[in-house]
Image (cartoon, rainbow, N blue to C red; front, side, top):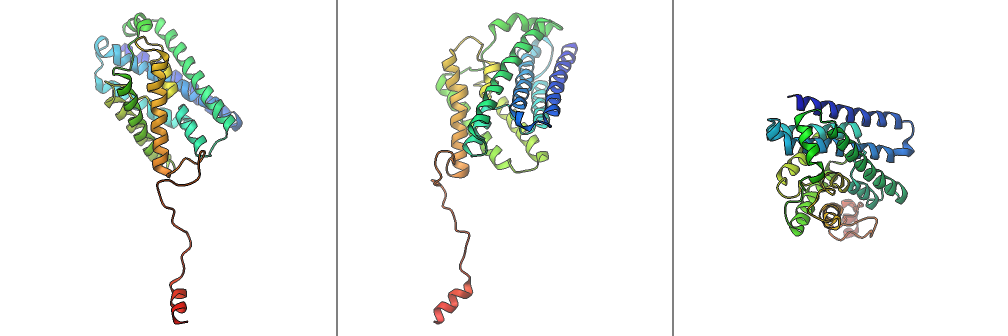
Amino acid sequence: MSGLNASLGYFVAVVVFAASVRTLLKKWPRFGFIMEFASSFMLVACWLEVQTIVEVGEWAGGLGPDVTVTMLFVVLLTHGVICGSASGNPNLAVLRFLQLEATTLPTLLAVVAQFLGAHLALLVAVYYWSLELTDMHMIKNLMARECSTSLLVSLLQGFFTECVCALIFHLVHLNLKRRSALIRVPLIAVLLTFLSHTARGYTSAYMNPSLAYGLTFHCPGFTVTEYAVVYWLGPFTGMTLALLLYMGHIPRIFAKNLLYFQKTRFRVPKGDKGEKKKM
């Protein structure tokens, strides 16, 4: 239980940092990319600790799978509430760009900030583990240099897994985009938790390039290029397919709807048709 208490304290500290950044940036909306930095930092830092509980806590701390799944859901739910529109996900930043909702420079700044946030979260987590506050963290500190990769299948299977999971996620996200946050945030958290738990034996379904960079790119077993194919190209492909299926086209690339016929908004009144027949 002491290990869980230490983890909860760590989570609270990370959440307070992200909430403080959001509060400060309300007066300067032009610096929204800094919120993306804080959002990515919070997501990666918390997920790293959840990953520690999964890898070590289940057998060293007596924490069952139900605890880890619940903690992941709470982390995702809290992230959605605290960070709001700042997703901490480069794919969602690119999605807004493809939908003509963001220009080039803000998109680039957001993506760079998200990867910087993920890198800082990894450094902070490694320092936190080095403190060895509990037996679980002592073991994790010993394992830090030889961490277990999240990619447990071949590159083709990994690419397909991330692509399909990203396709499902982005289709749901696009459909819930204009819904109330009270509905959208919990449903997205449930979906992400379900996909991550389901794909745990494959890729863990990160569907987030900066998250994958912080959680598994530094682990041995695959090269950076191989990780990029699975965790960057796979989710991007799934996101592009989801946008194409949802809108019928990709606004940033072409305006013509390739999948759906657009109905005309104007209809000829029935009375006019009747008068024309009489004449």
